[in-house]
Structures are given as structure tokens and as C-alpha cells.
Image (tube, rainbow, N blue to C red; front, top):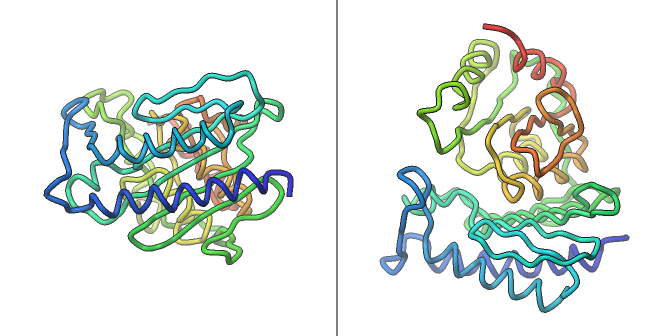
Length: 263
């Protein structure tokens, strides 16, 4: 396995970061501050990020790191780590039990994400994948659903922080999908949305306005589980491009058609 060493280390530090999140969840010692009215950060985000950043930097000093709360290490080596120390901070800060640690490792040589690890510590679910090796949940292989009819599909999505921007707040797209599907879920974690797609709990997912650390880890888990991940126009997925549509592959064309329809 070409990326085994990287994957094993990402799993190890994700679990340790998960312990940091559990320690702070619903704790009176957790401190909440605001980047904006809708975009929160806690001292637990920062503690988790500091641990992950320092661990990666020590283990792989030639690798680059980009993390959500601003930690950054720029190197010229092949690998770039996208790190979300606490995906779904708003859930976490409100005591809602749905959040995770997400790590995606991007290869500049291949121009692709090559390894992803997403850990949900509350449910003790560890999702992982490396390119060409399949996707796994707690060691068992996972696969996307077989739903081929969007009418009986469950989709997931999310909304950008700037909800007042009517043109770009995803409400128009949401309204296009809503009458056509069995249901739409807004769970609050892009990384776990992608992992739930990978293991067949939902059938499709789309969202605008995301950052690389939101998408990178989950994207390869979906791909290795047999799903499809692209931009809205079906171009190849790029974690640096703030837009994603992912599916079990069977409803992908229909989802793209709906997203790009007029009215």
C-alpha cells in the first residue's frame, strides 16, 4: 500500500484529537468565540489543531499543512495535509452530538487527494481510505448505496455562513431538489456527510462555499467506496475549489441536471 505509513499516522493522531474533542464536549470549561455571527470557534478547536499540526510537523517535516484555524506549514514536498481539527464547531458548541476530526492528504505529484481519515469520537466511527485501496469504517469495507432513483434517495447539504447572500446561499438549489427526493438532511458536518454517503446512509450530497479541509478527507472516502465526486459542472473535483457534488454514482447525472436547471 503506497500510502500506508501516512494513513496509519493519520488514524493515530485523529483518534488522539478525538479524545481532545470528547474532553471538551458539553464542558463548562469550553470557551466559545465568534469569527462572525454564524461562524464559531472554541478553545477545543485550537487545542485539537495545535496537537495535529505539531504532530504532523514532527513526523513529516517535509510535508505542507493547511489547517482551518490558521496553522500553516509551507514546504515544497509532494504532500499537503488539509486538517479540520473540529468539523461542525456550531454543533459542538451547542451540545449537538455530531462532529468529527477530518484529515485529507493531497499529492501534488498526482494532483489528487490520496488519503482521507475522518473520526467521529462520540460514535467511535473511524472512516478511512487511501487511493486504490478501498474505503473502510472501523476496519470493515464500505460501499455507497445502490439507489438509482433520485425519487427514493436521501440527500444531504449545507449552507454557507453568509446566509443573507441570496444568490449564493444554496436556498435556490435546495428548493430545486426538495420536491424530487425522499428527503434532504442538513447534518452540519461536510466531512461526515461524505462519510455517510460512502457507507450508504445517504445517496447524494452537494454544497457550495466549502474550504479544502471540509472536503478533502471525505472526498476520497466516497471515491474509494464506489461513489463519484465532482464540481457542479461535472469537472474533476478539486479541494481548492469551493464546491462539491458527491453521490453513489447512480444518481449523479440527475443531481447535476437538477443543480444546473433554470428556475
